[in-house]
Image (cartoon, rainbow, N blue to C red):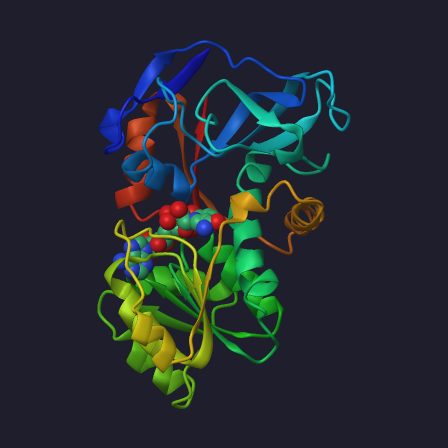
Length: 320
Ligand SMILES: NC(=O)c1ccc[n+]([C@@H]2O[C@H](COP(=O)([O-])OP(=O)(O)OC[C@H]3O[C@@H](n4cnc5c(N)ncnc54)[C@H](OP(=O)(O)O)[C@@H]3O)[C@@H](O)[C@H]2O)c1
């Protein structure tokens, strides 16, 4: 099959496009003929930081397509079904093998192109806000990275739950595009002091919940923006570097820091129900995630570069 692969960590140029052996399905495998690949923030972080577990290493968490074949023990799918799959690698290819409990049926009335971007982005946003973030109506939530794949669903889900949503992005134009998704206050992280703005917006109290999708040097301002005993969700490092928390920093604010790893939950029946609900809400127009650009898989280098440097609004897709 045609696929994108690499042998070592690095920038987009470590990726090659060419022929690799087809995946070998096991008894619990759902083999997907890929139609659309969603480029996830984690695909970039893995390429930069996570040593390849096998070589050549085919990257990629998530893709949508049609079931090509199933293993003997698979009960929920059969060839021809529309499906979105998740795995720790392998989506950047014509064929994507996923365990059955990481495959999600796509409703008939939902386009595969749209379904491809739903599970990780929307599920992570939902879990960070509610399952682990315990967001309540009337609370202030700060979403660092609100124009991204996880950020835009987080803005919508929080607003629909009755929270007051503060979002950050690089520039006023991008903030203006986020506002219709339910963001009440926008902060340009490049030019404004996030902590000062949050102090003003919350009447000096500080925000109740932070969703940190960017990591990096911005983390200290997010900590300052948080109220005492506030909740800080460590989700991602789109800025490219990984900050740390100090022992005293946690004590002084009695801060509740929580690491999110949605992939660890995605096999669970709870998440299967959640994703079925989110697919339905996307299909009926209640939730949306814009698709900024599409690339052929053969141009994965350009596609990853665009995600890292081009400030896409929402998601970027590739097509085998
Ligand atoms: N833990 C988990 O389970 C989990 C699940 C999904 C994703 N993630 C991680 O979460 C992160 C975001 O994922 P994503 O898919 O939403 O990525 P994305 O679509 O690429 O969006 C990233 C966002 O981060 C913002 N950003 C970049 N640098 C920033 C900075 N220095 N300060 C503030 N904001 C900055 C960007 O805003 P502008 O474009 O406006 O600059 C962009 O909107 C990634 O690191 C990903 O690996 C983790």
